[in-house]
Image 1 (tube, one colour):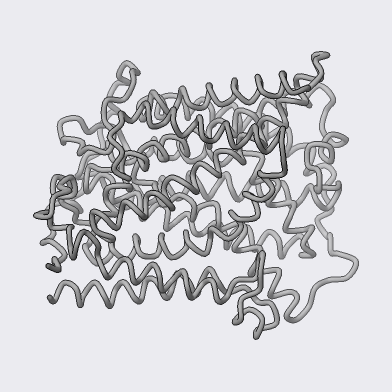
Image 2 (image 1 turned 180 degrees about the horizontal axis):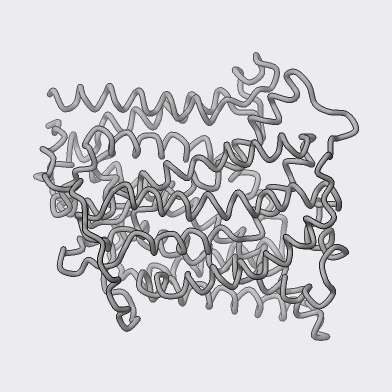
Length: 478
């Protein structure tokens, strides 16, 4: 029997008076997993979300992406414009985060409202767990490469044993944060942000001293070639914020009456500001050095004493971003239906990611294959985020947290046989439309007809959002 969208719960948009921040509680292993957070256990202020997202985005990957835009043939100012436009997707990440306090639940549970209890298990298995573990493995490999260089500076030979030990040590440090959970993340990420900001300030000094602000490529792109590069660049930059469809995981402990505008603002700014700054540094650096190998390329323009510090900063930044990934992946594993404590689910995710990383680094080019596949994830993540954001708008961010915990056939989110036709069809339609327009590892028919223009991101999101808005109303009417 088809269900309807439940009546909204009142009071979620009320303003919350500002007061002094609650004292930090002793950090211990988080007891909650995907269960509902009672109001009496809610605490904190939305401004603390800024450092959570900033620490995860003052990182090496952003530097690489910025450099890649110039390597694609864009002028410096075109690259900088693409960086700003692509990072505007952080507003959507901020929008999704408002559902956490409203429901008192993580994103992995809130999406039951979109896909149904059973349909959401499939959504979490693919979007929440599999993609997260692959990202974890790739980031871990990047951090390990920097750590291998550090090990060689001490006189060690980066053989199989050393490489294995380095990967395991970095993974253990990362998983420790994920296992301790929300309280540890909130406590650590402000100092991590400050440390990384200081390190990248030195990078900025070196880059700005050598950058060519009038840089244009020898053969500037024009016409279709220019638009193809611009759209590809926006997609590349936008893939970062679009990968965080789980932003409610980190806001759900805030009181239900917390200002939605403040949650959106602090989350979006925490991702937008550092991503724009660090990506821009990468683009500026590419006007002066070869950014095909950023570690080697940046070395001549940075102080000699700073090189090991820079490598350590790369490792720390990757730990920060991967700890968030591991935390959300652990919740996703629970939401798939596996009865396991959150702390153990995080460890299970880490074991899977470490195995993929070691296989890729020591045995084959598996990580290259995974990296290529992940270039297509925007085809899935764009529509998934669009469906989520549209649902928040349709419900006016009014979610019944306890009802979302009900997984029985009597649940208001059981829909038909545990699946919401509206969510499933909207996501399928959006992904299909995006796949027709993609021009990454293959050229879809629409992209081919347009001379290579990749419209997969805007088309996929627009189709998914429009379909969900229409089908959800039809489902509600019945």
